Amino acid sequence: MSEYTIRKANENDIPFLTDVVIEAEKSNCKQLSFSTLFNLSEETARKHIASMFDEEIDGCEFSLSNYLIVEYEGKRVAGLGAWIEAFDGNQPSAILKSNLISYTFGKDAVAYLKTKAHLIKGMLTEREPMTLQIEYLFVDYAHRGKKLGSLLFRTQEDLHREKYPELKKVQLHLFGNNYVAQEIYKKMDYVFVSSHKSDEPETMEYLPYNEKIIMEKTFK
Amino acid sequence: MQRSEIMDQIRKILISVLNHENFEMTESLSATDTDGWDSLTHMMIVSEVEKTYGIAFKLKELNKMRNVGDLIDLVVSKI
Image (cartoon, rainbow over all chains, first blue to last red; front, side, top):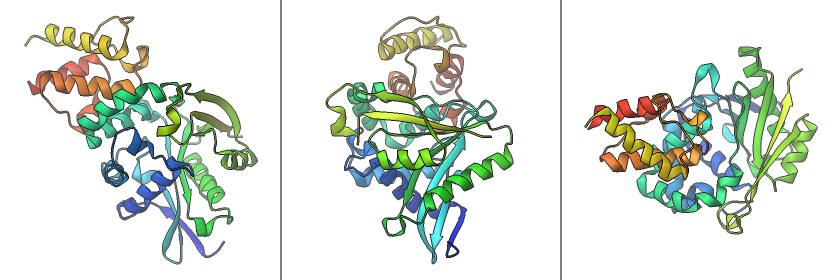
C-alpha cells in the first residue's frame, strides 16, 4: 500500500473528479443521468459537471475541497467525495445541487428534465441533517482489489470525525443493482436503511437502475 | 409591480409545478415545509420564476434563498 498516496483534491483535479462522477453515476451501465435526463450529449454533460466543481459550493456532491484523491506514481487512480449534510444551517444538499444544475445546465436542459421528472420521482431520497454523506466513489480498473475504496472511506470518516466529534452517523446512497458495492459496504459495518423505487418502466432507459437504496453506519 | 402581485404570481407557479395548493402562502414558506417541493420541483420553480419575469438568478443568489420572501426580494431586485 506504500506506493499509494492519499490527499485532498484541488482545482487541478477537476477533470479527474468529473470522470469519478461520471463513472460512479453510470454504476457500470451505459446510461449517464446527467446526459439522458437533460437531453445532452455525454460530452456536454461532462463540461457541465466540471463547471459545477468550478463553482466550489460547499455542502453537496460537487464540493471540490471535500474530495479525496488516491495517486499511484503521480497518477490519479481513485477519488471519493463527502460532506456534512445541512451543516450549521446550510441549505440541504439536494437544493444546492439543484441550484448548481439550474445554473450550469441551462433552461433548455431543465425544461427537458421536466418532461422526464415522473421517471425519477419515486427514487428521490432525503439526506439526514448533520450526518456525514459519502458519494461518488471511483477506483481505476487497473487498481481495483487493492482496498483503495476502503482506504478512501476510512480516511473521509476519520477526517470528518476528527474535525466534528459530534458526528453520529455516515450515510450513502447507491443504485440498488450495485450488489458488489453493497456487500463491500456491509463488511465495512454499513446497514441497509431504505429502498426508493420508480415503478415507471421507462426509467431503466434513462438511469442505470430503477431503485436507489440508503445505507448507513453509526459511529461508536 | 407590487410585492403582493409577485407573491400571487409565485403562488400560481407553485400550484402549477407542485400540482396542489395544500400550502399557506406566506413569505416564510419554504421547501422543507411544502409537500412536493423537492430537488426536482425546485429546479422547475426557479426556472418558471425566471421565465415569468425574464430574469436570471446568479448561483450565489439561489443558494442564499431560504423561503418565498427571499425569492420575492430577488425578483424585486431584478425587475
